[in-house]
Image 1 (tube, rainbow, N blue to C red):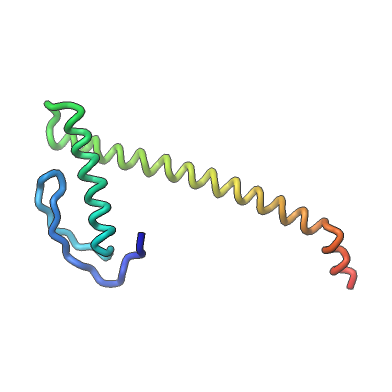
Image 2: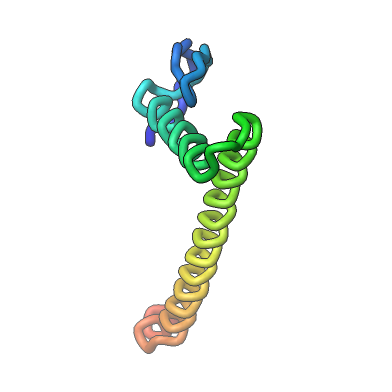
Length: 106
């Protein structure tokens, strides 16, 4: 995904069949990816229960997106913690290696 640009573009899109005009500093491909994600979540919520209201489908879709975000953040945090622990271990090994002591004596 590209970084947002300094300028905003206006996009006319449809989410769950509803027209929407939005401004975004993201490129068209990123905007379309976001629209597809939200649209898919809304459609999934609506197809799981044929009598669900549109508003409830929006809420369920929002909760699904939030759930994905929370779990991704947890996974990334766990991975970063693991990498930090490994890096500290490697630095400790390097600090106590004979080569490091030889260079310190020079």
